[in-house]
Length: 407
Length: 231
Image 1: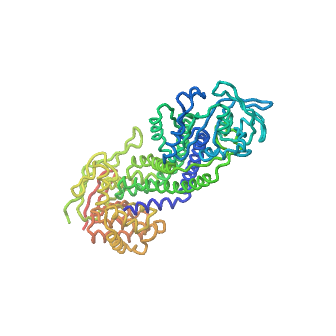
Image 2 (image 1 turned 30 degrees about the vertical axis):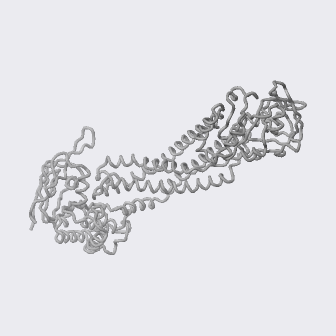
Image 3 (image 1 turned 135 degrees about the vertical axis):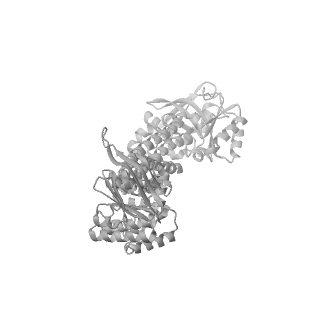
């Protein structure tokens, strides 16, 4: 009997080929749009988060107690070797770096800006957050005498400096005196992390220790893990092991990014509802007409002894075939588009200035997640199945003879 | 052969086409039919033939009264039960053939048997047997729109007969056929009635068709004007 149910459903769809094709295309295009938007929007959010993690916070950051409320050279992490050893031996940790930071001033002959000076180890930063990939001009190097400096791109613009230009960096040292050093600009970086691009001055760690008169200790230790799932556990372990340190997750350091991620999820949900609302209305219209047009046919079936549930099964089967075909076509199209943009990225250079304001890259790489396809399947099936409920109700209200005589 | 198995008791049917308008289609009809009869219900247009057939077949409900088929109530039962009753015990032949347009003649004939849950081989054999009797065995793989009116009506009769019902209700089965096809169809139905022992009740106003019946009911203005038996 299932065979004949399918046969009737299939024959009826084939007989109205152009209309069926229209519904399938409508579902496929809606799904394609939805998958593309989901992948790209998630790609944007993930890139913002990734930029923040790579260039600054790591997935976990350790600070001395009170440092974040009052960043001062008196509040440095002293157990650097112990923490470093522990992290080196933990298989969950992919990389970690130590940074010394102090607010200061960067000045040229004509301009001056307040900055954040980071004492870093370029080799470690490359391995950790691939800082070298943010370089947009010059070299990823402080030079042989370690007198080079890397600047954030927006800071370089504001100071109107170029590669090879001179920069005086001054800051208060641990003796509460202002100390300064003359450096040569060797590189300019754009991390699409507004705080860094606007104010970061990266200098060699040893040069920073010399400038700040801090032979030991660091302001921040950043950790990136092999697997995001381990963040909570490692954070808890580190906090228990070093109770006098403040151990924070990336989203505690950048709560706005987490909000952005939540907001984007909500936005995606609204988009999905809108897209499938529109598609659902289209499917609904086609299915209503399709059932009403065939009321006589269904009336005949009922008259010769087909139960209403069997007729319902036929209508649902038709609807399912339409939905599933549309879903397959849309998934293939959307999936292929996402794979393309996953590898090649979507070039939004035209909007790069606006995107940078939000810490986004000009080239956005799509994200592909299985749940896109699962939720889309649910949405397509829901839209197609709900769309036949009213036509079915109309049919249920008619007795077989009324249905036969209606047309 | 002569045990009464279809009883129509005090059936009335009133339609309400407008708010304050009531039309009595049937008024207190009481009839009794025996097993294996070949019955015609005739009368002028609007006399209530189709309404009576629909009520006897459970396709419509009466305003009052009862229909009992082989001891089983047809009126006032839930739709699910009624649907089962139509599937297992009643075959319908409609004036406009009413075949399922997307199925071939074979699939149309097999359809009710499949609903009954019969096996594939049984369906195939029974279809072939009935199709040969009705001379449509060469047309089984055609779609309804590839058949003439007479051929479609024979497929409709085959569909009604194939599921081995107790009763076949045929509403003006020859109305859309030419006289030759009509006579041929009636001969075939008569043969089925005799061979298979199925009770066949049909409505008609064609004198040629009426003349073939052994039990004749004349309706006029929704009432039984005469109820006669022949031969």
